[in-house]
Image 1: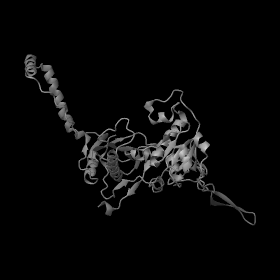
Image 2: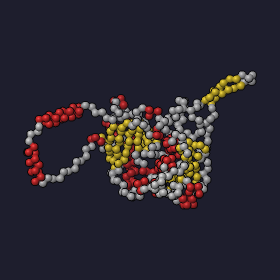
Image 3: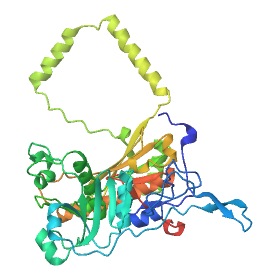
Length: 432
């Protein structure tokens, strides 16, 4: 993609915004963009990430009604079609049946998680997701979550689930397993399925639920093995901004230095790695090299002319404007980490943005990645307190950078698991 001068965005008057990873229910409720299904009429402005009503898509909000007068005359009138009726999405949570809990995969959350949050995440991934009855959330085709069920202390002790995850949703999904046993390369999944990995729909749903669990600080209990997976909710550090607007590297670099406070940020093209020092030559080696140079003699005339021509072409290229279709910026963050901002055009949007009308045109991806200064220790089960503190500091810097990008170019902020991240608007007084 070749950026044009009129594509550069500069919004000095706009207030800076920073991503805030708060309740998904709050994020969806405050979303500024329309996620309306393109098959609906233009008058429909509902957001499928927040709707929990039963409705029939593709129909208008009004239809023709008929009135019969006392003299028998029939007249027509516009009247609302009573097809969208609010339903209760869940019922009071009863204690789960222990036998049923052992027979099915369980999606575990705390009491603070609203069922609407599960629906919003499900709709982010599956077109057909939605409530089909109170306490029944369809995910994809034959897969659905049933709940929530309460996990009292004796039940949690029997199932081996964390004390903080007191609600459970039962996953009803066809079971399909690979014939070969899982191996260590599959990591935690191998522990959860020692007899054979799930395949097909079951694997896709479980993988998606694992991402949902990380977003909601929840977990899963796997049927059969009883293995409990609780992903680290703080491990999702990286953020990506998707926007229809391009900003030139020099403009983004200036904004990051002067407005976001990343004074040491540089264009990656200006970072020259230190060349390794060559070992010192011994006197015998130096003498041998000088002898070889003397024996080479004069350079052939045709070779000399080619070298001169190549130099002329290189000098001419330096005077031409460079066409940039992607670039990267680097900055130190935290105490000993780095942050990279990679910018380029992408052909398709992430699935959560499939309803955004602007994605029919140019889509620019601004990926903000954390580069930890020290690699995690192989085989280490948990991070040290120092490493967690470094990650927390780096997360704050990543959020600040993504917020600045969103302020400059608009668009949407997406986390590592492909879900929307809400932006908390900062008042001009706080920004000053």
